Length: 434
Image 1 (tube, helix red, strand yellow):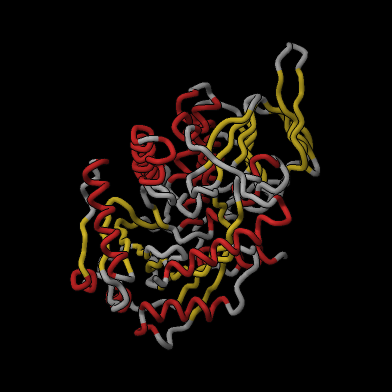
Image 2 (image 1 turned 180 degrees about the horizontal axis):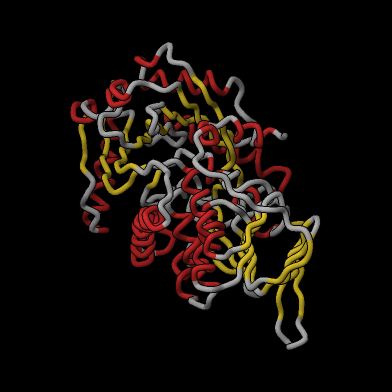
């Protein structure tokens, strides 16, 4: 079992999963209309939406369904994007930025609808708090909420000053924050597995422990063209390919891989607290994240554990003394948790882009992709899966606004890009202390 497999096996989500997907490894040759590579939220949602429309689809996962970031994340269902709307306005103009914002709102609703339709047990909760450590952070949050209200008609967020915020979060650390009742949180692995199961029940063929080795273009006798997706013990002929691999793209599409970088992110879970203690920490059971570049995020689980995430690794190496390091950050927020046992510590990779906007679109010859959600994809990934399914079926406009976002490859090539990113992130960490 490799390092990342071990992390998944020891996660709180793995210990509290509500179902398992029974799927074979590919063995032999089959033919489908579409092959979707990647068994996380993006891939499972794409396969589900295609199968619901009567398209024959194979969903391939190299390890186990929900194994990657989809099953390890903080579980925060948030509108908007990691790069924020003002960045999108500069990149694509206000009209397209507004369309992208509306898509992000639709993504949150899509998540809720899918959970209800397929009766997925994943502890969905409403409520989210953006909090600022320093007074300038709180002021920036207030200005951000006003910007969304005036320019995007998103008027549900409320600014909370330090005193008001302390009534919701039992911590002296924060100077103020913004409450967003439109966002929320859930159990990410159970949600991801629920979508995979729904895809299987809708008729998609699911294969796990099936790593794609190569994808070759094939010309048919009728003059058309398709692909041969070659795996270790079998192959699939298809008309379309969807890449939903994100940080685990490996060498399948080198040009796509240049646009993203894997970043390690980590979480600990405490022992179960009493319900009274849990509500004493966060009275409204919202998910919380601060505004630092290297941010802390936390929430309580359905069985009243504190789930606290924070440390990141831009070098792809796990931080030393991970559990103790995150515990220290947690106690900085909630010193009253001193002496509380940490029962789980885990992590995994998300993919970031240079501008932190998602990288979604089409490749020549009926191929599609989605990647680089930059830690902000819990709701968006599933929704984008529905857009990819529509694009496969010929609705070319569904991806237009995402394809309008300009993206650049990370500099430095395969040898220097990680050291360059580590140096850049060290600079941004210093800005958190200003």
